[in-house]
Length: 79
Figure 1 (cartoon, rainbow, N blue to C red):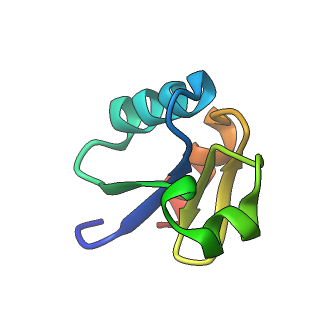
Figure 2: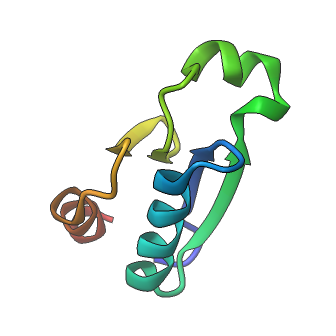
């Protein structure tokens, strides 16, 4: 699955965001993961507001608010 790029939309000081980051890193192996702080980009802050963390593969949402091991495993199988 080289080249797969996941994006984790986060917010500084968010414990759920930190947990999701840890969970994805622990289960994702060699996945390329980029964490993006929505507060650093006005368009992302407007789009997501307080709706973080969010884990995306491109435009496909994988997890919202909490790490969902079942959804992540299903995504890994499809990827």
